[in-house]
Length: 287
Image 1 (cartoon, rainbow, N blue to C red):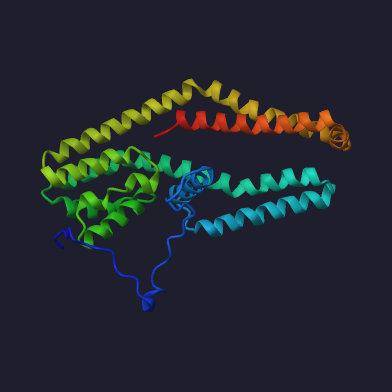
Image 2: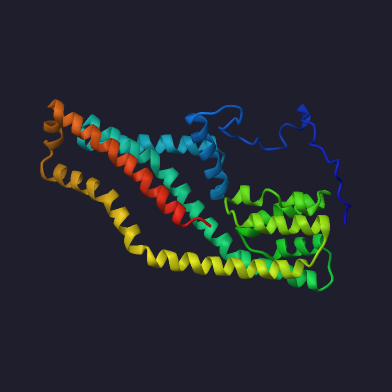
């Protein structure tokens, strides 16, 4: 085992080794504030937390291609600029919605794996192995997606970084705030010692209790969540019904000032309502 090196520094970038490392592409610069910086930071975190092995720039290009494909298809069928723009906006969101679904599914799998992983680490530590060896054994045996993140930390330990710093960014890489307790427990044991086995067993029990509470909360609020989703979907279905019944309905509506004003206000309020609803749903299911 390589001893921890507290003076470990970042390797110098040399031109002859430029093709060996993949560039860490991010849109957020971290040196400014504002709406644009917040959106860029949210998109960067979405790509990291979703586990999609694609650079953010390439995924953004996929969003543009999806918008062109959906919008172009609708324009060929209807030849209406307004409907085409709405379809292009929906096409632009399709890859983002897929990434959000992947992030939610990945975080749920990580939470389900966390209790078993903690108990396995406690059993390895009980057998007499040191923390570094126990962690690398558990990282090798843990399946994805949690195992992928643990193996990144294990490779850092093999390079000489101590366990506390190797697992410090687990919560930031996955978006699962519960992993902060796990990384803090390992860091405290690395610095001050203590009964790590009891801490890991209690952590596994606490995570299981939290998962049970979240499941009961989701079951108790299923009617409210479905009602909120229906409030978002019904206006879109109503507009689609009127367009299907009368193809000239939208043209008639846009020919008048009050029609354009009411439609624009309705679209604006619909977007605001969707953002509020999904923000509430996200807070109710946060791990």
